[in-house]
Image (cartoon, rainbow, N blue to C red):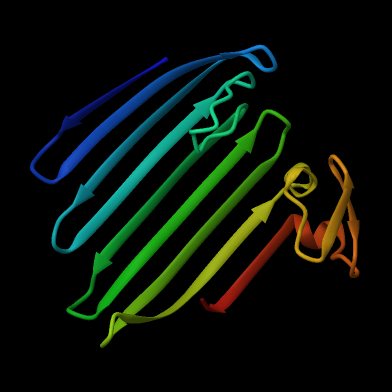
Length: 169
């Protein structure tokens, strides 16, 4: 069961909220909550959201897993007819203690033929719990639930836990 409410805060700004409750024999009962603010005009596009679910929340139609909190923002500012600056940030935490944060700042340049060039900076960080609970990485195989065996040498846990990249995206 769920309820969604949406309201206009102006001609180009919308606030929406959602609450949901799930009940399954396997996961029990859980609740989910989501709040989102969107603004879009000719020069500025903003989306800010937050979501939180209980560990017992189980909805295959939801992008939010049970026992997870997520906050994010995506802001795009037009700099001219062909250029746009975009900031994208996301933080996810889990009831398992997993934490992941990512920020992406890029300059987009539109080309003829619906093509685009992007140049930017990216920072990401994940703690060890997030690295251990993530889906198996490319180059690994799974023989039993939750156990990934490397097919090729894997990166050390410290390298998987935090990374910073700068360059072209």
